[in-house]
Each structure stands twice: as structure tokens, then as C-alpha cells.
Image 1 (cartoon, rainbow, N blue to C red):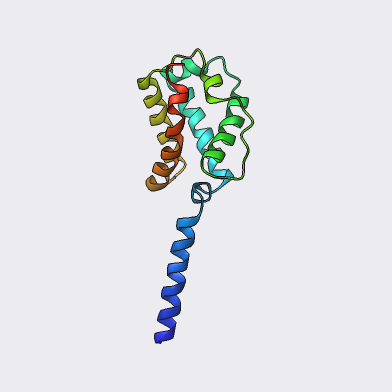
Image 2 (cartoon, helix red, strand yellow):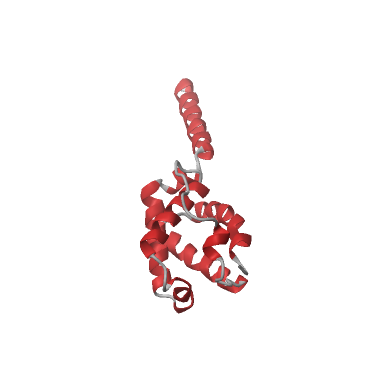
Length: 138
């Protein structure tokens, strides 16, 4: 009995360590979940008058493809980002801090609708925040 308990505890500890070492991409659920989040985000934008203005003339299929690549890359997935720099993409948009924060709120909604747990959402946002200065006031 003592050996069984020791084996179970060891197994549980190894399992916990493995999940702590997995990438955010893996914790999210991989490519299907990244695509679901991006699709949800596009829907959020579509029904938001403020954000829609920034995207009304965009090639949504390209936006979707590049955002999937970018989110995959930021979360340490097996992807390569093939799009333009954040500075190039956001040049001339003059995104304010309020606009950026509103976009973050919509992205959180998209993750919530994809059933991403809040601790994982926080990890994703912690990676994405590094792009903030590349996006606002351009």
C-alpha cells in the first residue's frame, strides 16, 4: 500500500511538472484553440462599431491567417510569422491607448468564448503586451 501511494504521488508530481513546462500554446489546446480564439476575435470586431472602423477596409482572410501565425508564435507554438512588422501593420492607424485597451477587452471576450481558463488567458496577455508599443500612436 505504501508503495502504491508513493507511485501515485510521484506520478502526480511528474504530471504537474510536465504541465508547468508545457508551452502556452500547448496549454491553450494548440492550433484548433488558437484558430477558435482568432475567429471569435474577428466576430467581436465585426459587431463593435469602434473596432470595426480600424478593420473595415482590411483583407479579413489575410488578417485571420497572420493573427493565427502571430498568436501561435507568441505562445511558443510551432509556427513562423510571415506577416509584416507590427509597426508596418499599424502605421497610420493612430491607435490610442483607449483603442488598444478596448481591443484587449475584445480579445479577452474571444478567449472567454473559447473557454480558455483565466490563468491561461493571463499568460497569453502577458506575451501579447510586448506588442503594445509597436501598435499605439503609429
